[in-house]
Amino acid sequence: MAAKTKKTVAETRKPVVIVDNAHIIYKVFGTGRQVTGRLAKGGLLTKKLRYREVHAIKGVSFTIYEGETVGIIGSNGSGKSSLMRAIAGLTSLRSGSVFAFARPTLLGVGAVLLPALSGEKNIVLGGLAMGYSKKEITDKVHEITEFAGITEFIDLPMRTYSSGMSARLRFAIAASKIHDILIVDEALSVGDQNFRMKSEARMREMRDQAGTVFLVSHSMKSILDTCTRVIWIEKGDLKADGDPQEVIDAYNAFTESSTID
Image (cartoon, rainbow, N blue to C red):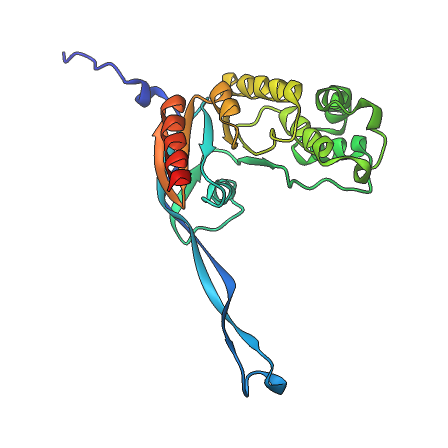
């Protein structure tokens, strides 16, 4: 009888997100050269509008496994948010594929809350949208309010909240439930030190319960404190994928050399 081969760690882990040769291309309006004459009434200068293509993500591939917390880093405009929106099913690929074993939940600082409604009513609506029953989310209102640190303001309309209060409430609502796949896009950058520590601890808890978390952030400290793996996207290209400290060191060296140049 042949001896049984021992499975590697990679073979025993469950893939939850597969990105295969993904390309994202946006068509946007760009202004062309200024023209005069028949195209411009009264001889005034005008500009000719033209379509321009922006190649936001260029053939990116990777596999994410159950229980990983993955930091996504890169310069502004590098395509990080576009890639996360594609994983969440909100942005179409020009080519390539994205597979997810469960529906990802995207939490960003731009997530919609209804400004005319109170914080409490937004908690209830947000919870119902995530699949809670009315009783389940009602029972969690106090816990969510405490986590967000807005107890004194919970009965006031959302339009009276600061951007930081609103962002903390969004995170607290989303983090009240264990998600199979949670994408957090810069939501921690608006909180104070205490809130960031609570948020990072909550993400580790979700990871330990076999959830998978993506964290898009410019805070290398938050990435190092929270993530088990880091992916670096630069101008649409995947530059590095692996150990958090190693990838961040490479990214920091790149940004320093770019500043000197």
